[in-house]
Length: 239
Image (tube, rainbow, N blue to C red; front, side, top):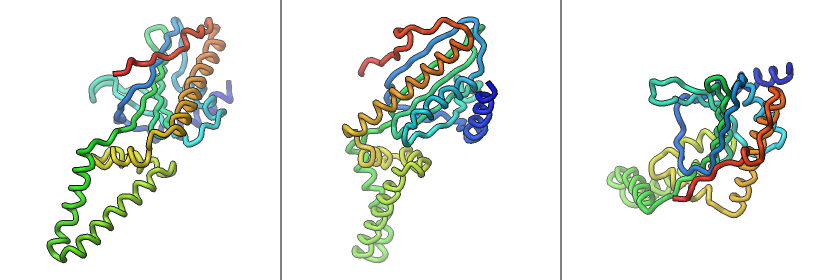
């Protein structure tokens, strides 16, 4: 128990300090799972620490972990602590919290990949033209073309840099840029067979880590373990 408490302290000390208060944009939901344990008291931070220990043991590559404070309703409502694990465009968010006299756990998986449409390319190209237009009018077509190519090359280089896991913050920023964000997703995060397999393994690793944490909770509290049916996530119907 002392080791667990130390792990909780270390985990929350390093991650919660960087928690984001705003809700991150979502796109395509992949799966959802939840359960409620009646007459059970447990610490959300302790449960998140159990999940984190299980996921670390699997050594999932390129995994970003954070704690988020998300509003329960409007921007003036209370905020609830979530445990987020993200790998490329696939994001898992886990919630553990008291519910009445019980303890509630949920797990969500969603895909943040954005698709680029023709108008994204049109407006992105138009933006580059407008940025080069003052130079074109002042110095002529040759210098204007050079400036256009330089700006394009700079944007391309920044996008390539953002794919490095060390620059995850830059990846988030680019994804939120109108027109250029979806283009960046399509060019630098294509939906290849390799990426599909990697993401499937990541989803399975997260699900197993959560269920193992649930099993540890039930063992500690003397609660009947969940059946295999109760641990299966729900997959939304395709739209």
